[in-house]
Image (cartoon, rainbow, N blue to C red; front, side, top):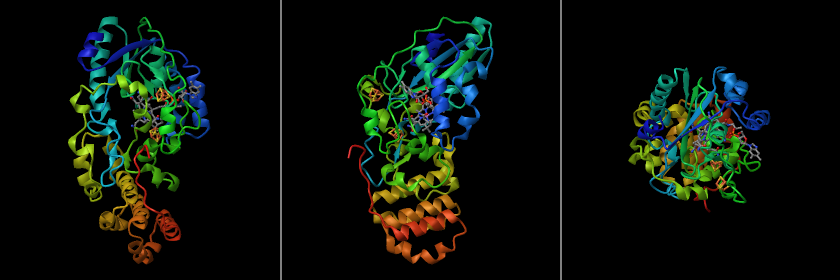
Amino acid sequence: MRARAAALGFDVLKVSAPGPLSPADDRLRRFVADGHHGAMTWMAETLDRRADPRALWPDVRSVLVLGFNYGPEDDPAATLGRPEVGTVSVYARNRDYHDVLKGRLKEIADLLARETQADVKVFVDTAPVMEKPLAQKAGVGWQGKHTNLVSRDLGSWLFLGTIFSAAALVPDAPETDHCGSCRACLDACPTDAFPAPYRLDARRCISYLTIEHPGPIPAAFRAPMGNRIYGCDDCLDACPWNKFAVVAREAKLQARDDLKAPRLADLLVLDDAGFRARFSGSPIKRIGRDRFLRNVLIAAGNSGLPALAAAVAALVADPAPVVRGAAVWALARLAPNRLAALADPLRADPDPDVRAELEAALGQPETPVCKPASA
Ligand code: B12
Ligand code: SF4
Ligand code: SF4
């Protein structure tokens, strides 16, 4: 089975015994109690099942955890200081990893079911499973201070998938923490999203804000977002254990040329059909055109490039309120006079968020900022 997993592209396969994931279960409950999950209400709704694999499937006797390397070919931070382009996080630069992994996990699960004559279930990301604590318990790596799993052999660029089995397999030894006194990931975060080492307040995390957060992005996080338009890798990229990282072997996870440094000018003109065509098969498609345009507009507002003002001004009349609001903010930074000229019709906008955005923009003009992560 390990040989088949390797042949299918998985870099590691280890086994853990199910059971309460203590103390991770209590920490998960605290994460939700503190509201750190933000609008991801599904985390609160699935709390009990998430905290213990047996609550999800009472027959489970072993959990197989598989890791799939998606290491980048180029420097993931290379575009952060380039205002004319957007930065897409490494995991989203090609095909949706759920699609890439799911069929292969099923193939391994079928093999396991045949060999053990026991039932199996396959999970990748979407099910209420605490994949990182399970992976640590199985010895795949440890949860670093940035809360993601770090492998001594592969670094941080590792997708996780799990197979639950009703057969009692021999578990591997858990991995221990190798962060030591390092705090590189905590210091790298542009939005100060770690209230303490090993704890993330998702509401402050650019990954959450650009992917999961539904409405207008809170004003305080817009400038620190820079040109990050989908996800964020700064804390992962900072990890010294990535010296062991290797480039993804799977071609479907290597960056598409048009997502290495997508020009904001090209993205600002995407309508729904254009968005779907460009992001078919990509994880970016999941957030839909309006949320994506919202992110691109924040990057445009941070760019300091007046050449983008015309495309931004056109979006002030977009049908989606979340796009109109972000366009108002971006236009105020790129061409305040142009926004002032549009103020009267915007004051009559049916959406209160758009009107509030206008009043904030007219009241407090800000200076454009686009800085590399290290600045
Ligand atoms: C919700 C979610 C998010 C949320 C919240 C992230 C988070 N850290 O919780 C958001 C949208 C922000 C997010 C972002 C990202 N995600 Co995400 N996400 C998930 C998901 C669906 C659930 C994670 C979860 O349960 N979070 C709840 C918190 C409470 O759990 P936790 O992080 O394990 O918290 C632990 C620590 O806080 C620790 N702890 C707390 N206090 C203390 C104190 C001490 C002393 C210690 C030692 C520990 C400790 O205990 C907690 C429980 O273990 C998983 C898939 C899955 N089903 O597991 C993917 C997953 C974690 N994401 C993944 C990825 C790749 C990302 C991004 C890198 C994507 C990107 N480039 O933008 C970023 C990374 C941001 C970051 N720094 O975490 C991968 C991570 C792979 C890996 N190697 O770890 C996963 C596993 C998906 C997958 N199948 O591969 N994600
Ligand atoms: S993904 Fe980015 S914003 Fe989120 S915690 Fe890591 S560095 Fe901070
Ligand atoms: S950057 Fe340092 S503290 Fe953060 S996960 Fe890596 S080793 Fe741990």
